[in-house]
Image (cartoon, rainbow, N blue to C red):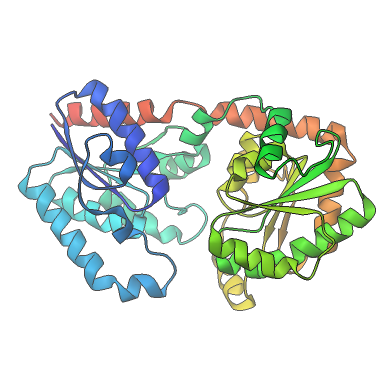
Length: 386
């Protein structure tokens, strides 16, 4: 048995490693090859190229590296065809993987795509390419599977691996002790303080547009609630420098800037103010009330807002199909609106309790043991083709 896997990002490496572990139980002598990261390599995976070569973002970088990416894709295709691979699993990276999967499927090689593109939200015309490219789609979210069923694409909702790793009940006090250790016990009487975690984004443009409104909001919030302290986890050194520069305008703000540890920061907080993104799912799994903020330059927002088909942008609201948490978009993302969003949670414990109950239900919905379910689908697909 020879199974191909192609991964382009760190999140895909996590999924790939978990999938390999599950498939090894079913096919102990199986060989795995393609492109993967360190976690997959630790499972005995044979990577033809470093995973980082596929990790391109934005509009310009893929264009600059297009010749290299095309060479890699051609080599992968030749490798899988010549070695008579049994199935190829493309994990995320749809712009790269779907074209490869389409060619392989045309050559009668089984193809599975793991992690749906956001085709349900925008560029819905991509469903035509997906139907030609994949024998089976594996989705992390239930509403994605419904979309594919409506378009007659074989699909299985396998749940979200992150949901498998998070406990159903979060221990806020333990997280506060961990946070105090990280910042040198600077939070006095930490259990009694109101703690707000602020996550302005992982990209420089996100911090550029969201950061100023977020810090002004925290300044106004502290003026109203002097017992409040703020913790800000910076993704890397570049984001830390960028955030430090913005915070120079607020020298009296009681803020603790830490390197990484976003999960601890959110887990310890009474409320999270955050940029829209996958971290909203983590905040939901930690059962935290949140205020979601999204801002871009006017030109980009104008284009995206016209293309967007979904009613919501944050994963908690998308999963529930209702506005469980406030979403402040573009011009609505003012400091005053952020403050009011935070206070609506801090001053209404019953609303927080109701929210946490709904978050628990959503957590259980996603907690399906994704690795094993995904491996089941691949095993069944191979049996059918055999």
